[in-house]
Amino acid sequence: MRAKMKNIRVLGSLMGVVSLISCGDTCNSNADLEKITASLSEQQCAVANDNTVETFNVEDEGFKVVDMGLSVRWASCNLGATTSEQSGNYYAWGELNKKSNYNANNSATYSYSLSELKSKKVIDSDNKLLSSKDAASMNLGKNWRMPTREEAEELIKKCKWEWGLKNGVKGYKVTGPNGKCIFLPAKGYFFGSQLYDTDETGNYWTSTGYDNGNFSYALDFSRRRPKVASSGRSGGRCIRPVCEK
Image 1 (tube, helix red, strand yellow):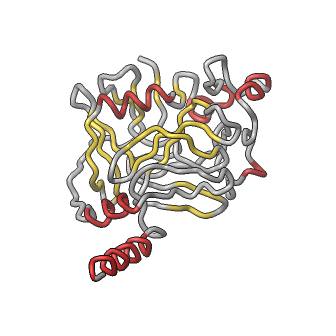
Image 2 (spheres, helix red, strand yellow):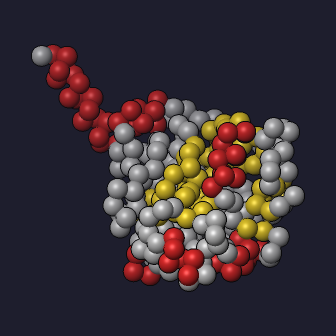
């Protein structure tokens, strides 16, 4: 009985931090509610690893191209940022400009199937955004674009990911096979007019649509691990551009 009561107290303690800390997988069980959720074990991870120290000195001031030894080159900063630790602008998927409120009613792509998006000339035959609907291409020029799902997965699989701080901002130092690196800040995401989970999660769009009218693929991470998962299209997320070699 004492053990059972102890477990209940631990559960209650963990539940108390759910609204404050996110550490783990992205979940969009309700397309209109895009707030990131996590399991209790992931909350334990967040509490146990809150001992980050200032360790990263990524020399990437200004917007630069970084060849990390991957299939594409990655930008040193988010779209709209001038240093790697800045969030830059937040975008709904398939939209070209930031806005003050991110919701299903004002989303340009929410609820449309992949076939409908193709007929509307939003995506190509590979389910990727056309350059005219790609915020990176339209804001930076034709040499730049949003990463695809496959390129985001390559970044996870072929690179070393280290959680830490850069100039007081939490995020990941991502080091490629050739030793060159970028920093991805944990700057959260927008739902409605509110910013959620800044300093706890990173949420970055890919250009690849998901086979559901409410979602597309995004690169999401907490201090536990990065992954590519479906995310609600109407939410405001960061973009880290790439360019071809």
